[in-house]
Length: 224
Image (cartoon, rainbow, N blue to C red; front, top):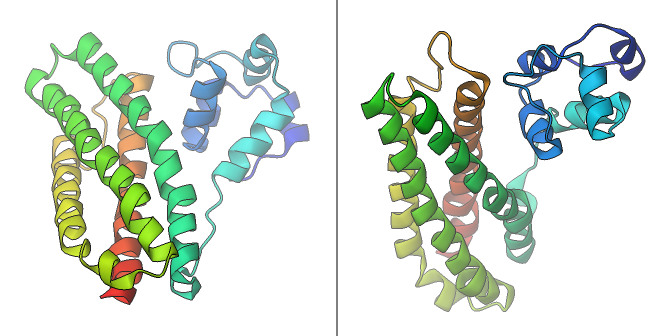
């Protein structure tokens, strides 16, 4: 769905309406401090005015965030692949993982009594994902990518087996999260934060699957 800023700014659209139709809005609203959970019934125009943001500007950003750009990774030379991996996956993950951890902990704190085993498992899995992914990305940025940019193919190739094993560990955690969340389907009556957590985890899974695919099957394959 593409919003018309002119019509949207004069319609009775609420914050919740925006999030339901455009899940990509969640991160933007959180960054701006607009409450889409308990404050979801508030008119979007009023919520934007409260934080000093033009409704049209917000909708334009949400529309842009919802658009998918297909990139042919195989056409990029190795050094450009490293650059794009860092900007496309590593940098966003560094911002996204703490956000997901905070939401997982909040859902556990507020709703843990409803399903303690499942919600504790989700929070623990997010922590495990951070513990695996963050140092993995640091190692790539500090060792593998510089070697590739310097043309040290043999040195880089020697690291691949260990990195692929780490990818497998991350994949296992993602499978666990999918199982614990019933394929990222929030239960009936779940609050906005709970729903946003599952949406974020679903997006994380999709992004990380592409991330690992590009590294294993494009970048690493070219070095082996």
